[in-house]
Length: 418
Image (cartoon, rainbow, N blue to C red; front, side):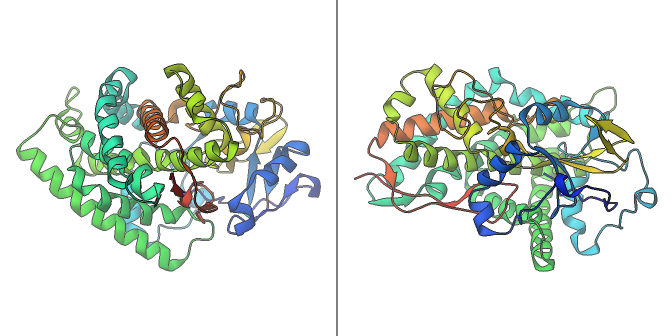
């Protein structure tokens, strides 16, 4: 997810519409839900002081704005930097910026349509369902690797490797490259921290340069000898003379590799934590395919992996009485929307048997997560195999969340089962 910044200061906001919460405050990022509760009880459409832009916490508004074509992920296709007062790109983040230049997540039509059409086939439900046996095998191999121990960090031992290996193999990279890909991704994701430091920017840029170097070699090899993988497909697809450049292929591959594991890793950790803290019997949560699917959806709702998704107003407009200028940023609070008491009964209760289940954790509209069908299968398999193999699983220490508010995930998840 690109770090979108409010370009023009907004000053004409009445005090009763303002709210303050420091995204870097450990009390906040360990559990932002108390803040969300206050918003839902007072004003779910508010001006977030620290970010300097308007935000929406209500489920109805977030769902609608994700689909509203008056807003977009990019702005320079409809305005100039000078018009918006946008600063020039930073020289020391040139490599990182290049990885995002052709990112499917940041493009608007027609560029978005072109790229999404190309890669969508690989992620449709009927195709990724064929990967389920591989995911089951991989999950059991991971559990085999630590079952004999007394305790383990489930993030490193299970949550992170499975989606990283699967997306790497889909793209056409060796499974052994997964740890390296994870390390690059984690360093790049640090760019989305609130108040990111110069040192972090340098490190993220270095990671992006290393990532691109690795992929350029893989792309050169595929041009010489294509295979049955997504990388070769992107390089060889030709629609009436329209082919992707190496930079477009590289940017798309990096997005798929990063986004292809990030949300799944966080949801696996957050979900296991939610299940264990709920006191519910895991055997009932995974008693059938239908109940397993419902449990996964409730994990996605209850403790979402992504909490803030930003978009630009593409023109001067009005939404529900709120006047916005061209270039203004709006923050769509996915984690808050999933806990909206106007939409969900007992919104702050983890209930895999609820009849009003839904969530916006994968977004909506044209930027709905392309990897959602794959992520759901990975989560269904990881949860069901883990609790089948280790029915006495329990928390070995209190879990702590990472200091990256947008990406809501655990630093580690220490569990035991004896």
